[in-house]
Image 1 (cartoon, one colour):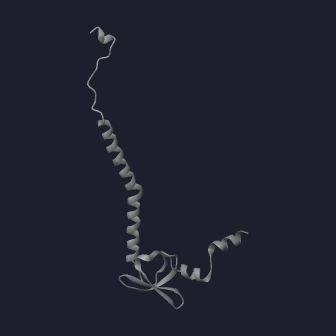
Image 2: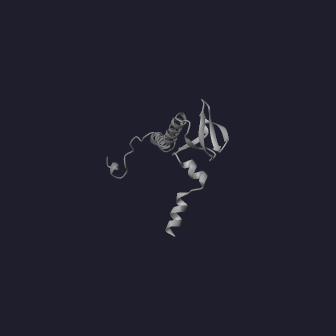
Image 3: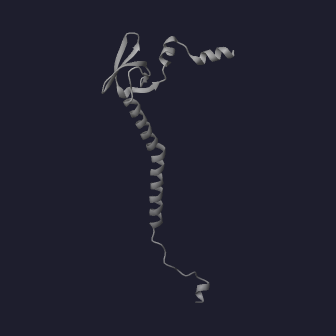
Length: 125
């Protein structure tokens, strides 16, 4: 008893590594959650929106392909769409290669070379 005053008693210690295992599991779960919410979930949302857009394509829609070409849809089938890219020039492309549906009239503005940004810049100067 007298020695307890000078020497700290030795208590049973925790088994080495158990604290590290809990930290590892929590850290791994946190890392998976971060990847899910920052990478996987937004990508799935974009894929779903693109799939809905592709399924809703109709004749007369003005679109941009994944390669950047503008055109108007003239025919729609299960796997392909017929796209008029210039007067009398049509291409057959896969439906999935349509990148975006444009507002009506965009194609006519692009073909005429009318760019509203240039017009605004000219008006300011």
